[in-house]
Image 1 (cartoon, one colour):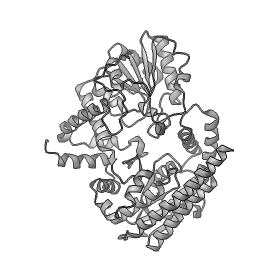
Image 2 (cartoon, rainbow, N blue to C red):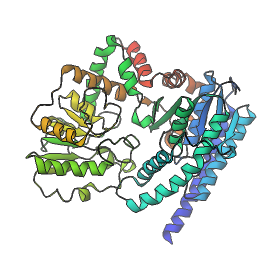
Image 3 (cartoon, helix red, strand yellow):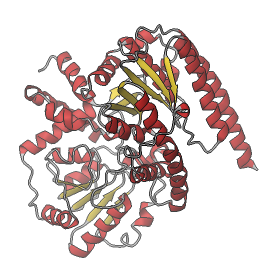
Image 4 (cartoon, helix red, strand yellow):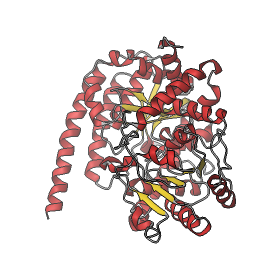
Length: 506
């Protein structure tokens, strides 16, 4: 009874907030004067979806307004696919989106609705296997882990049904419009993964945008959270600028080691004493984070990789292994439903196995400095481990896995062989590899994040929705974002050029 009342109150509060936010967005749209409207021969599509964070559709609408101010002909495609369990919440979201679309239509913007699209008979674009894979990733994301099998299966079936329903309509609506570019939120959540697949099939570039409070991530080649543009930025980076990048990388790493960076993952400073040590350090990702979803190579999932790696080390070596949970998971917003102590229960009584939880008062970099070899999935700390002179073995297809400074086994036998070589000191690192890791770190952490108030979270929305759109448009970081979308150049390269040109020390 109490739970039901809380749900009703939460829904009513949501309705009031949606009404308030819609009125604010209404005023924001009113202050925008269209400069470049829809063109039949070529346009850029902004996908507007009723995603889980209530400010996301407003953010995507505003992004479209800024792009048309930059000279792009914009069409809004409203993807009204319903992934909500609560029908009333879905109706609230769609009511707000419809209101904004009516306002935009009056101003001369073109609006298309996914639900109006015909069902395409073309099934070559996205196979059932791809749809099932997307549904599985969404289920992990929704349940915040891999262990909640019953909940995962329920979410998987719910999502798969919606993805199958939406996929043919998405292809149909994209085929019916003469599009030169598509921009969609995320790249995995909701139907966004389908747009990536359909864009590739139709040879239409698709960009994605994601982020956090006060920050945006974007990519022109895959899910934004997976930093898929970094390899291109890495390979295109000017040789003359590399010394500058190396210096900035080590300065930024120093801040992260002391917990003085924008994300402040480390509780304890590296300068403080650290008692944990082990020959092998296993660095975990947040399993449900979009940055880590769907990148597995040797194992079907994160938990299988953790369990089998620890088991193999105990059975085949005399070395100590430390498993470090991602420190971000100590925060409620990033917490996981997976219980790593339960997963590792068969091993935790062993003196050569140490599990370091996200809440532990232990600095990750202290663990790195005392180990012989690091085993990672897609964590940024793998880059810093290489910078600190520790060989890294990765078991994922993450953005840095093929850049030459980490060891990426193709088979399980090679993986175990690398571990043995790492223990014996045979996995060598050259200065060139350390420099490459530093460059990748600089690009991914120093340039790829766009820190700004114009972001998709509710807290950010409350700030920018009261601003003059012209003042947002003039912000240097917003110009960089728009230039990246329009040119296709990685945002990391564009941001680097700005920082390099503004710096007096190079």
